[in-house]
Image 1 (tube, rainbow, N blue to C red):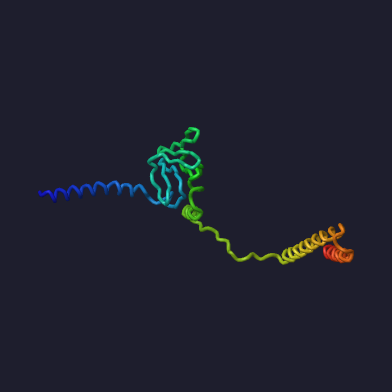
Image 2 (image 1 turned 30 degrees about the horizontal axis):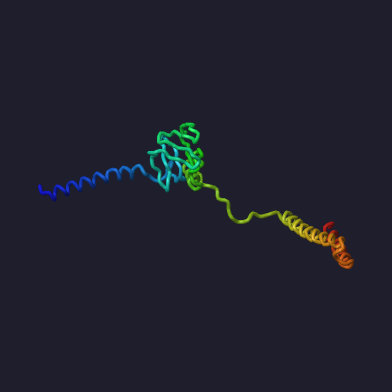
Length: 193
């Protein structure tokens, strides 16, 4: 056997040796799913296994994971708070990026994933509310229009009362005050109808 062929075999074996861990890592790094549905980032415990969710990937937690509120999650599922208190992460529970313990299914799944999961479990399709407008009773519409008109008159009345108050203080002439009084009487009559 020549030196070149033995060196080639060593390189080939070294290449295979480095490929094996990469393949096993690829198997443990599956898409971020729980029951086949996409999840948000964080960590969860399901079937006794603690998994980390990050950037669309779910991998088994292999080192302690620290959250923004100071909580640390260990690979064995023990949560260690900032004050040192320890607690086991419950089965089916998750921790969001802020460090809050939440329900895996309800709080870590996206809304679309929850709908898909419900459809898968129950077989029912989600109810879609049509976007067209709902017919309204004409009497309600008429009442709303009258109320809107009265509100507009009330706004005008408030403006005129402000003007009249400034007239009473002597900043306007008596002719202007008489005009404002006439407008106030007209608006008052409209409101009384």
